[in-house]
Image (tube, rainbow, N blue to C red; front, side, top):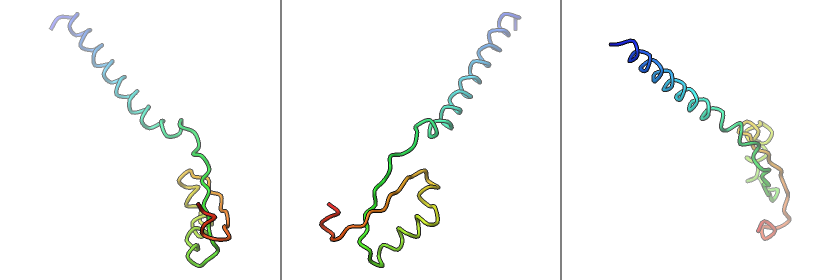
Length: 81
């Protein structure tokens, strides 16, 4: 193989490696560059069936996933609409 062909092959390999690194970096960095998720309003009625929501908030399950949750109590089920 001539010297010119080796230089071209080496350059193409460097371009391919650079492109793969750029793609990997873009995919890994994408979620953090999207910004914070908008706040989520969660309504509850104050029954025992709502316990899971409060436990999840207290244990930080929502914040671990990057979610901001605000709890809002409703007087009756129709208020949730």
